[in-house]
Image (cartoon, rainbow, N blue to C red; front, top):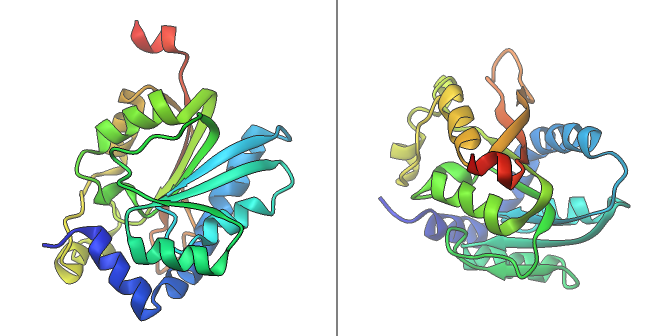
Length: 211
């Protein structure tokens, strides 16, 4: 098994990143639409965790209420491509599990990333404690979960360790990290596709979380 960042760098060099953008766009569009129904018209700063070639950053940056967004990814070739495409964008190549922003933001978005991490609960705690401001929102989507039969052989095919968790296990993990789940649903679900497991959660008040 190889590190996911190595595989994704190879995919960027092969041009597979554009296919990832096309494949994930419908689910991300649905997740963000639901997120902004919750957030309303308030201005926000955002982080795209595992931004790939930056397409999600570019998408969010066009929204009038987005004051600032930064993309972070551990695959150096993905970040290089993001900087080539979007020369005015802000991108950082860093290990998501050890990186923290200089200032907390109102929204952290992530698509198809979390199940590659070595310690997902620790990452979620870090997002809550170090990435998000008070009442900040975490919105993420994953295609690799137990109820999606089509994904069960992905780890072997790709040669990367992927956490296989059920929908209920994801719920428990997010709540256990100090979040209140506002919406949990399957985005872009069809007769042929189980859909992307989407979770939109708000950072809990620290006094409530610590009790």
